[in-house]
Amino acid sequence: MNSNDVAVGHNVMDAERIPHQGLIIRGVAKSFNQNVVLDGINLDVRPGTVVALLGENGAGKSTLSSIIAGALQPDEDACMFWSGKPYAPESPRDALACGIGLIHQETRLLPDLSIAENVFVGRLPMKHGKVDRQQMARRAEEQLHRLGLDVPATRLVRTLRVAAQQQVEIAKALTLDARLLILDEPTAALGGAETDRLFEQISMLKAQGMSFIYISHRLEEIARIADRIVVLRDGRLIADHDSAAVPVNTLIEQMVGRNVERLFPDFKPPRANTMLDVKSLTSAQDDFRDISFSVHAGEVFGIAGIVGAGRTELVRSIAGVDATSGGSVAVDGQTLRLDGPSDAIHAGVVLVPEDRKAHGVVLEHSIEDNFAYGNLDRFSQRGWLKPRRVRELANELIERLGVKGRPQQRAGALSGGNQQKVVLAKWLARDPKVVILDEPTRGIDVGARAAIYEVIAGLAARGVAVVVVSSDLEEVLGLSHRVMVLARGECQGVLPRSEADSVRVMELATA
Image: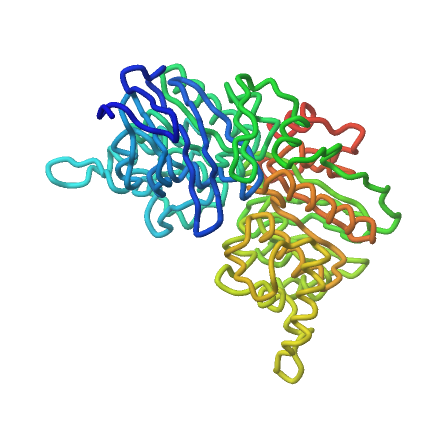
């Protein structure tokens, strides 16, 4: 065999007859012990194009991305070409040296370093033998400004909210001298305006010949950004569409292998009695001011707004996490004294936070332990935990919410969707009166999203007041009886379902 020939099973590709100068993958497979994760994947990413890579959690998207980015090695009989040459990176550093970078969904920033230091970590600009901090800050702020984040680059990353940290990750990627970027759920924590700015950047870079592999569970945005769509299921390539003009229902069927007639369940009208009553609530940190609204029993109340509007800060204050300087919160007619989260929990208010891995589950501990942490007062007697009761409840909750795991299994080994179900289950065991969900389906595949939506519908049917905060406007509109729109920490209006559409919500969010 000629040194320019690469075997793929029974196929041979001659390097001199490579059809384009982008990324070419042939016969890529990967197994872990007896578990086949990828099975003979072929993929082409031409220069100046965006290829959307879709599939449920566990479909093989992350494994394929890791192979392309040099973090994993494929099994034998696979070949890859990049820019007309054989491509076999042995590490992410090798891939970056070739111009290929991967931006993970979960931020991998260094919290105790500044934004600028994170953006340029490993490649700090130097001047006269010293780090040129002025240039570093200027270049970082320029890229952040293009993405809509106007904060000093000297600010520590740990002080930023999840959405802002995601923008820093993206800014870091865009400052790399990369010609192919793999973006894994880049808009999961972003609102509409921030997503628009990111798409403008991608379009500009496409025009300069840069390529993208774009992974997202937000199917409605795929048609806006992608040139082609590739669908994986159970490690196999199911579909390769040469256009992004594919009906969402078709993509969902290809992803999950079955017909999904509707994503959002039907919701019954709410009941007459008020379950949550918020009056003139004001943040101690000036994140929001004079917010008033009420939620009826059995109602799903959506909160929309662009990043920085104060949505997360508001629900954290209602749940007793953040301090307020004025106003009141009442549950089922009783005004609460919120000196901390435990006050809200004992009053029947629970919060499913936006960052489930940092604040929702203890990843290194078991599923049943995570259930117990939210219910220690119910599982202990005279300071002693009742393991049998914990195990019984764990089995009950796992079955009730369809968690794909065993009570003793480590929570960190679960998919994002199953981790979110664990967080939900932990609080549902308390029979709450008010459930607040901040970004309930962030980074979760379409099958798991549908399951979460059914849980929300079930809560509402039982008379629970449900508050949903989401950057996914389709999600807010599809779930909510009413939608409150925040902008710059102030309420711009509350829309009934009949009047709430994307145009009206965005008009208020950007007012």
